[in-house]
Figure (cartoon, rainbow, N blue to C red):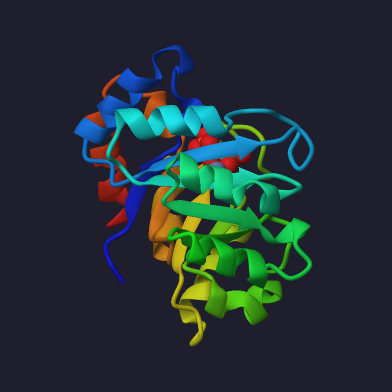
Length: 217
Ligand code: DX5
Ligand code: ZN
């Protein structure tokens, strides 16, 4: 698989200056942006909605990796695709059978992602692997940036990496920083989401370079 890459999570940027914030990480060579969508039900927080994704689409050419932390993702995959999402990830916790929704995401022309929170065993995803372009392993309970990386994600990443039927990209999200990124990459994460570790740094180029180097070490 390709060298692991860091995806900045815009949740941690200054929302009053979003276009400038995105420009700093785009100039620094970020390959895509991670965008957290929260509903106040599946997670105890609100964040970004469809109009903000539309606005992001107008200020960057980077692929938008849209993470739907919603109780009812089926109602929103089309609006977010129309707003410019390139990857749409839904949570296994709220879908009895995620296959139809993953197939719908693909039919809309986006990559289909499936995510699981720390309490869910990764083996639960086994029947659905063939319908996923990406698996997003959460390394925190979602809802907030700046939490501590839960190493339960490492065994899940390694299980996916070693599974003969898993061709999906492996992504990890939550608490990824200079102290945790090497272990996550070593376990098989290819897309490493980082919010506060990137946007908390004054110099985004230097920070992304440091994180990417640690991921490849
Ligand atoms: C957590 C979100 C993450 C968040 C990560 O609910 O899904 O994408 O932005 O933030 P950090 O990197 O600060 O843990
Ligand atoms: Zn996320």
